[in-house]
Length: 390
Image (tube, rainbow, N blue to C red):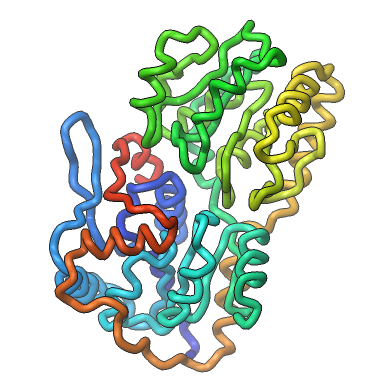
């Protein structure tokens, strides 16, 4: 591939859409990597941002060619969001190699892996569990074409509020977004209604996520749920340091940065395992419950709340050791690039899977359905979440 290493370029529909993308944007800028947004965002009233899905695939290709003209000639492109756009803009992509990053184990993501490998040399996932799912579903895919690179969860450390809030004994929080499909915030009512949840201190939640409005309508007056004011990710992570226990009710997860930050801060997580979900690193058995089993979750929760300071500290340290065993983002990326340096240059991708006159919005609907089995439109994000990458 030559003596000079290719430049690393991160490509996404829009880096303001999710918190994982905001972290990757910040990480890329700090490491001198380049960024390409296929659909730049626009601002709305009240500080909201949305992804502009107007125009055609032909216009998206022209935008990609124009941006690449200002980048180094030798490049490796990493397409985030499960390769959104790659199968449409492949003829305009001038990278020597392309990788597709799947951030989360969406219900149908394994079949999309097979599709994107027509246009990319490999896929990246943040945890070993997702690699195992791909290899189980498609054992013919070579092991070397699937790389594990954890999310750069620690890059936001400098933005956390200081001093950290003092821990409040017995305080429990829900670190996920208010979202029903993945984070399963709809399970919160059942959790706080259980007899093991004493109600002396309300469960803290943050007003971010796609289903905040519908959740608020039902629970806005319930004293067992406390809405915090923090919206931006640094402030939310800072507030988590006050919690005793962090409750995860998700139906699937890749590498939730909230879990890493809770463990790093000494907060005891209560995380589901089984039914297609598992912790991204080794947690104490005291902090893991059987996914979907409320009785098991509440039993573990009650036990965590009843721990003395000494036992609580030992449990927190055990979880930190599991987090420390994860490879760092820098090391994992370096290992991936070193392995690719010894491979011959691949041929350019073939024809795109979508013609140039497809509307981008319609293309987005099809890709969303292919990933999740559900139809969905553009996703709104609040501007404070974008602030982590600037």
